[in-house]
Image (cartoon, rainbow, N blue to C red; front, side, top):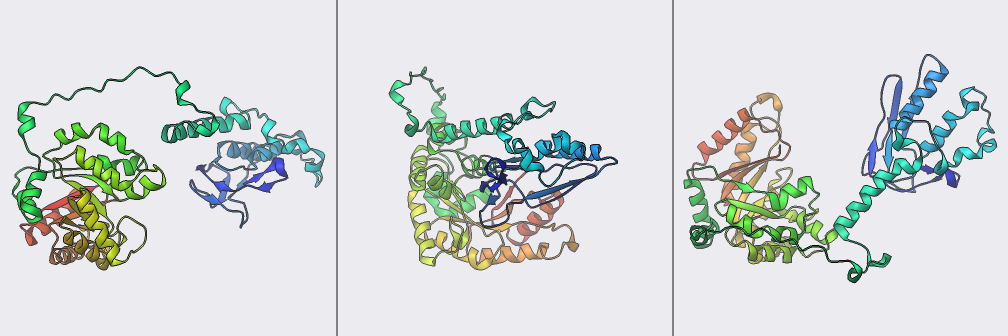
Length: 413
């Protein structure tokens, strides 16, 4: 990551796109990856390519192809300079000396260089970065709007045609029906667990407002975007077990990237969606952060979350560390919430040779969670490893040991 036009001064920053080149006769040694931060404290080399061929010309052409296909965006690199060297007649003829660069200063002028490539988007450095820059510009506008500092004046923008939102037809029967949340409010967590267990059908948890956009959109859905569909969601999912809509990364992202108050999000959505139990993901002793917090902080957090509208607390620890789970379960329980004890699934319980994460491991963890007083058990298959055979074994064994306990399966495809 060097800038040839500044005498190869090291460039720093975050690599927003990184893709290797490969192929016959190509060796790659590198440490780069998308998201990597290049600091000024270490060597700026992130990848080295070596090519070989039956002739010098073939080897050089192979290297040109490698450099053309290599994608590194977000920081300056010496790829353009290397392409200039490989394309120079003196280099192609093998007539290069140690003064080659000094005698040909145009090699370092990568911003004005033009290369003979069939792809029109790769003929010069401007074209190479044009699409990436345009995408980042549009993404920034979509998330943050037009910057006032650059002269944006809303009064000068012509008002676009007003979009009329469609009206959801609501029948008298729909107006009178009550959602699942009324059972939770009237009978408490134990009564709700009993009602869920006695339910004859398969119940669902909708993750659109939390895990879905956390997994697919980096948790970037704003509160207003969710409020826009709250009325329809409340009607369509009133019979759902829960609507997972808070916790996890939503708390952190709301403050750091969306510049919103996560508590206001919860309270506004609660007001707009009165009939569905709200569920949050609680990282045990880590609450919604990335470190262990004092016990009193976790207790106070759960208490306020319950008051602001959370009904169901899914408590998990990525390593199934019982001490972390225990604090989260106790704090959510004291707050008066419905507590879902969660087992993070890995391995394959249908294969006894898989080692530590066997059927007995999960049965033992479930017993400990039940002893802590959870109202339901969740199998959190965050890596999509739960096969049908393993599901039958695990759910069947849990059902046999805990006949009255609701069992919740959450898998990522």
